[in-house]
Length: 376
Image 1 (cartoon, one colour):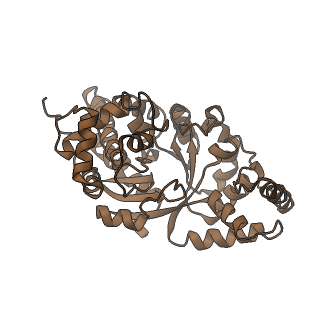
Image 2 (cartoon, helix red, strand yellow):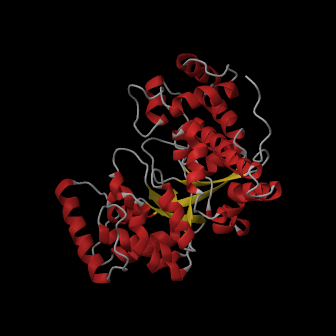
Image 3 (cartoon, one colour):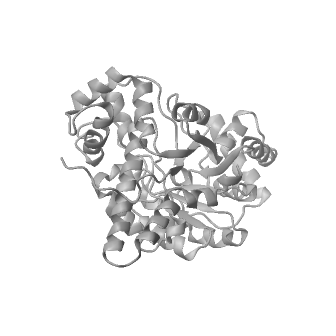
C-alpha cells in the first residue's frame, strides 16, 4: 500500500476542545464493541465505517498489518496492555491540549490530570451544568435555596475550568424558550422535581425551566458554553436536537458575547454552519461524527464549511473510553481537512499559504482564542 502524500496538517498541533477520559482496564470483545459506537455492542458493530477504520488506522500503531482481522487486533491489544495502547494511540494524534468533560462516567475513566499525565499534554476541565443541579439536590437543596446552591457550586467547580456544558439535547431537547426564568419559576420547577424524586428516587435534571436556568447561569459565568447537538446514543430524540431550534436563545444571548460552542452537529452540520455564519458568538465542530463516519469524514467537513467561517470551526474528538477514538478522531479529521484545503488549492480557490494558515486556525488557534487558553 502506497504511503499517503504529505499533508497540510502534518505537524499541526491539535487542541481537542471536547473529549472525555479513557478506561484503564483491559477489555474483552464485548466491552470493546460497547465503547466503539453509540449503538453499543451487537451484531455488525465492527462491520461499520468506524470498525474498518480501527483495522486500517489503529492496527499499524500496535504493530499489526493494516486490515488485520478483528480477533487478531483485539488479541494484540490485550498483549500490549491498556496503558501502552493508550500511550501509543494518543501520542500519534499530535494533540497538545485536551478539554475534558468528566461529567459522564458510566464506569471509571481518567480524570483530566490523569489524561495529562498519560499523554504529556495539557488538560483542562469542562463543567457539566446538569451535574451541578443534581449535586445540589443530592446535597439536600430546598426549592427556595436551590438557585443559590447551584450558583455557589458553579463558581466553585469552575474555578479552574475553561468551559461549561449543557446536555439539554438529552434531557429536554433544544427548543428552549429564550427568556431567563424568573426566581418564582425556578422554585416551582424545583418543587416539582423534588416531588418526583420522592416518588421514584431518580435524581435527574430534565425540566425545561431548570435547563434554561442552568444555561443562563452558565452564560453569567462568562465561560464558553458547550451545547451537545445532534448525534448521540439512543437516549436522544434526534428530531429535537437540530441546532436551528436554538435560534431564539442564540438571539437572546448574542449581546453578551459569550462563545456558544455547538458540539457534534451531525446530521445537522450544515444547519450548525449556518448558525456560525449568522451569529458572531457561535462556533461549531463535528466531534464524534468524524470517527463514526470513517472515510466519509472529508465530505462532512466540506459540507460544514460550506457556510461556517473557517475561524469558527474547531477540532474535537468527543472520545470516550477507547484511545482508538482519540486516534481516529484526529487522524480522520486531519485527512478530511487536508482533502478539503488541498482541493481548494488545486482549484485555485485559495493559495497554499492561506490553506496552511487555515489548517493552523482550525487545528488549534480558534480553540485557543475562544477559550482564552493562552492566558490559562
